Image 1 (cartoon, protein in one colour):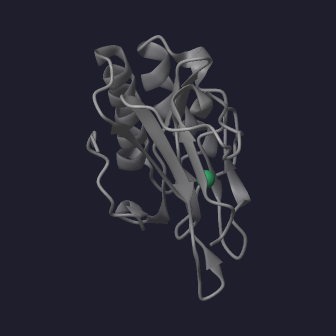
Image 2: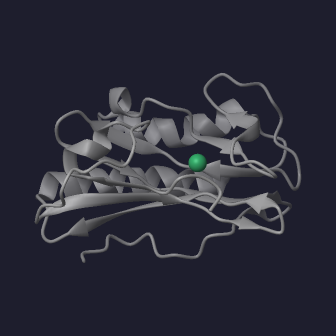
Length: 175
Ligand SMILES: [Mn+2]
């Protein structure tokens, strides 16, 4: 594994920098997974959030906001734009849905022989994104006391746009 696997349940996932704990899983809450592996000395990193049982509609709606933000950034990433512009694409989707204050970290980070590397995909960065840069796109919404939702793919930037390494479904999944 490229870092300690993170699994967080329900309100516990509202801390995006939290850790796995002894908090027991309850019915009808979200489960956030964040994990990666090392392959030929290169790190991977991916996150998925799934439902364990039925979750309230407002939680499902928030999931859709995160998914739209993640997909917008992934689809619009292109060579020559700045890291700040890419961050803004996802952040704007979340802000327009009214959850801007709950997306409290950068959009993504580079990865290579370690899991967090240059470039940093963050607000106001003027760094130009270049062909074959490898980075994550991982917007999230974290509502204290309620839930945390993050969807993350890592990939590389090609002439045809962002090519994700992760193929796992991002459709809302109920276990
Ligand atoms: Mn990551």
